[in-house]
Length: 342
Image (tube, rainbow, N blue to C red; front, side):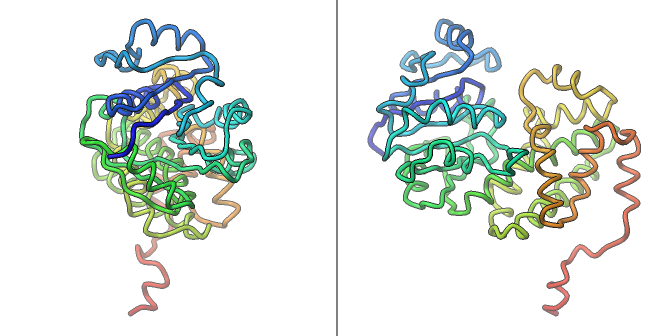
């Protein structure tokens, strides 16, 4: 158990609210901010999130329209905004962030222009080495966390003491938290698993079965880990909760907005209409451009990512995607180094 602390939550989406509920129920003082004022008004008055209608939120959660109130004096700042808004949010919060605070980011994405992970964006905007940054990532649907279903997650930071502090704060009877010092590896997994989940959804929308889904998940984590290794990240991360764990849940659960969006794309629904039908941010679409650029930068072959990008970009008839993937040159599943080990 940790001492009860004060936590500011930046973002009132399903994930931010699910974590706010969990932390509040653990006795921590939680203040939630959103850039969308009506969102704050509605949730604070109804104590219900529109996308989590079955759960009444604790009365102890406080809500604010002023980001200053969510930052000043809090021990932890939880960034829970969609990845495209992380930089703007960090810039807005920066004047109110002080030494000794820990920023915990749960957004999953890669910035297209800089190819920065979310922690790198936050560090650049906050520009204070005395503020520690932790990425919290893993197989965690808000729809289950808000119901206290058993869940596991990874607290990752270059500063292992910060990761361990966050581990203790977020660990509950229903949430088990592990630590990892490979923060960029954890973040890469969190961003790219959404892209692979899109591909799984496209295959499902085309009528492919479980065999294809298993193949895409398995070869998908191979692509992600191949890129991660080229970037100098830890191989073990990709076989852990933030890697294969998060990919499995995102690529198989109907709670996954990436999977649902992909299914619509596979059925021929245009991207804008598919996104509208899902009704929430589809992070796999946001991560695709950066994923393509990273593959090119590190000269890594990522055929599943490229196929998903071709569909989203409208550069290929969706019905041709499976044929293209299945007709690639035959290869061994093992790497060259595996043959040398014989």
